[in-house]
Image (cartoon, rainbow, N blue to C red):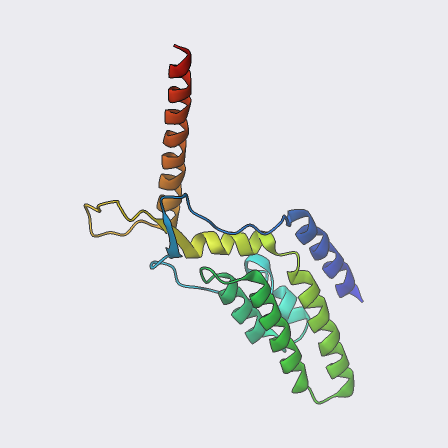
Length: 176
């Protein structure tokens, strides 16, 4: 069971990297929407392209892993919904396994994979940041190029910072 050590290491990594999943949000004066320049992608069964997880645990779940990644990488999808669909897909894949021994192994692996995705907030949050963008409806664009999600997030932080500075200046004016 040399793969058990790999799973334990991966679990430890994910637990340490996991924080409470945050909802991607925008400042009050911006609208959250899907980034039109973003195309959902997948990297196989494992974080950041470490497809060895799927390869070492059988061929059953590759499609399920791809669908799970694309679900995470689609703006405004709920993590819980992605994870539940992932579990259903894996269990459905196990129905097609004919050998009783392999079928048992398939269900055990499906359960392990599902348990592991419970610790994937970091990957979910990162994917949502890339898939969504904040749009400022009052902004007049002077070019035809759309801002990327990163540019909009930077602008949102700048607007929030400037607003905080204005409030601090107003508070200081009271004392002068």
